[in-house]
Image 1 (cartoon, rainbow, N blue to C red):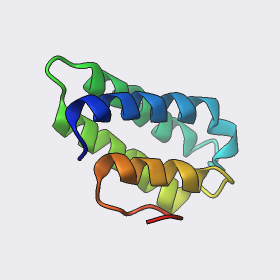
Image 2: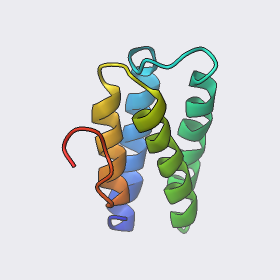
Image 3: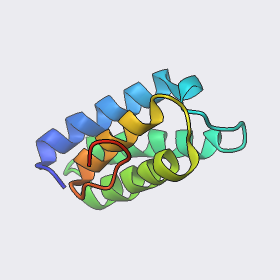
Length: 96
């Protein structure tokens, strides 16, 4: 995972983008609440003092899984790559 300060900002940015793009991710009505649950929990972990790295890791991994394995919308690959960049393991859809 990246540096804690960078991670928090990146997680908050990713979650904001995901909330704004939820209709473009290609998720069904049954799948969307699962993603949104993780999108709500990730910022909580990122804003914790001290930063909850384990919580961030867990939530971002779940988000990335849904974006890679379930979502098929036009922007889901870009969002999955952002999650992969946050995690630092290079498992995305397009660029890693």
